[in-house]
Length: 360
Image (cartoon, rainbow, N blue to C red; front, side, top):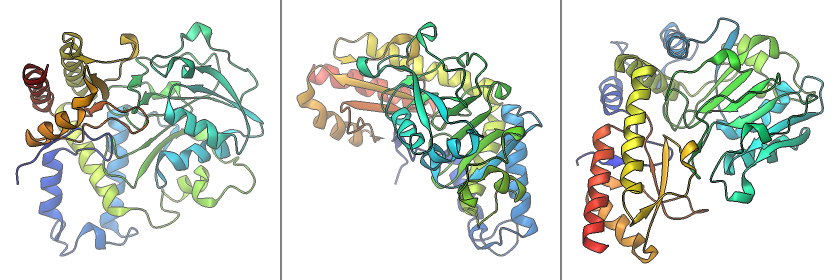
């Protein structure tokens, strides 16, 4: 069966070359006579895989030496709790920017551990923009300022790192990490579920400045204690070894592409041409403020909503799948993460034009 162009928001498509290599190494990794899935996580072979993954991630993002890199479980949802558990450090409140559903989930979880101050919110406007930085209200007594860099459901993305006015900055980068170069030194903490841009579901990356760890809330489970995880090489318990291996293959693939500057340029081309096709048509529309449109997730609607099922059926026949919008907003959504080739976006644009010619 031919591979399709998979526009899923996550778990998302992986680079085909990564899947082919994983297939080749599935039963016998480097003449060991066994699969990665069968190896001891304490053995020298897997430890070497883990160490190379960290080294490659540090190289791609130019992570400073005073930051710990952790490979954990529980996804971003687990980190919604782990962030306040580890970053409050004796304070009782934190500031959050609310730009969509994932921001709201992080806020809801943080409220279990501290008082949450909403520094800015675009909820009243339907999460179609990001509040201007000049309108944010930051509490200088907050332990940290948290934001979600890209909202996969609404399709809103920060184009730059916001000024935190001296507050420790924490960010959920689950859906746009490694899509462009990043100045990690501006953050106290970055976390990201892997299943959007860096691997399969089941492993989570945490990048945290080392002076921030070691003062968790009383009662913090060991598995969520960044210091204990760092001291144990992210192996406080048995890690998801195969997922970690696949993440490592994706990092190697990103390096082979030429690094994040090259990847960003490709992502910009993909997003620009898809938005241009939508904007040039009276048949399709995108509700997001152009100043903060996501490069990763492009929502759109038809002029005639009655044809949505027909659109999806015909798209699937054309090899374009998982274009349904999130159930909370409807319509369509094309997720065009790093692994989506430019040819996939071109195929979608051509299908959209043909659909409009036939049904518009």
